[in-house]
Length: 385
Image 1 (cartoon, rainbow, N blue to C red):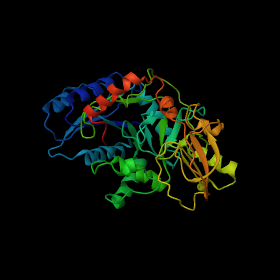
Image 2 (image 1 turned 60 degrees about the vertical axis):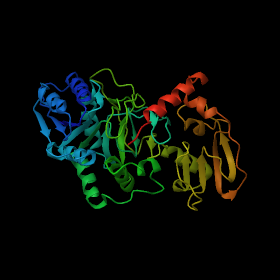
Image 3 (image 1 turned 30 degrees about the horizontal axis):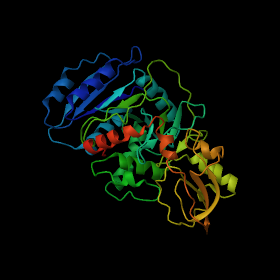
Image 4 (image 1 turned 180 degrees about the vertical axis):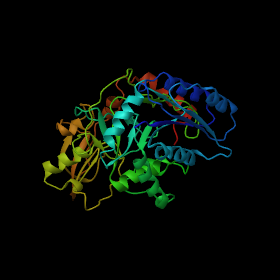
């Protein structure tokens, strides 16, 4: 397997140069020709084409594709993804990313492992440290392996075998344009613009009960440069990358992993643990530690663990001290940040601690800094997808 590297470029010459520079400095298998495709959507920045044409690629064939009409982000990424079928596998990189020098070695090992598991729909090179729905810190539970699973497709460095990509494309032929709403889909994702291909890839994973395989140490990082989905550059999505090469990975399969997350960044293994403790079926327990799920009294949910104060009988409550978040429930840390509800019985809404979650999420927060943070956010308009 020799994945082609496919760069998605549009109107950001300096970002493209930064990405290409990091590709040039990365490690590749000796004696193997690695194809590089730079796909430039029609824009108003000729410097982008100049940067692509002038880049010297010493590790294999280089191809620059310049589109005569503007495809838009969705169609452009989908066409780039099709290279996974043409080449057997491909790594897709948008131009505001940077790669670790060990990114290609990780991808080779991950794709070789993932192709044997039909429930893996793609491989991420990026590791999330931020829940993009709630804007709160995220960290996957440590289970001894170099990967975890997430029902959330990646767009900040991702790889597919031809078979993985074909499965998604076949599904998209039937489902493109349909509503992707549902209790199992975050409102944040449903509200993304029509130019988003990613929301359909996420819906595909949910419909097919599949997952993306994620690394614990990131092989890409995201500058979130000004572009289609970002009004201004921000460091919010910057994550530590692997600074090294030649790492040998130990991966878990989806069935043996204890770090399996749904599209809301909630650990499905925790739901199973609570269900066993409470003597209910796994599907009858819902976990909502980030408070992003839309529960409205559905009778199929008998137990609910939530950060929200709700009018049901509280069976047990938990504090917020351990990291990651779900460890507080796993180890039954006393407190009043999370509540285990019996949804069949009404009860008085519990009283939550004031400010404890804020201090937990922001370890070094100072009151004098808050005004500056708010002013900066207002000025830059936050993040958009």
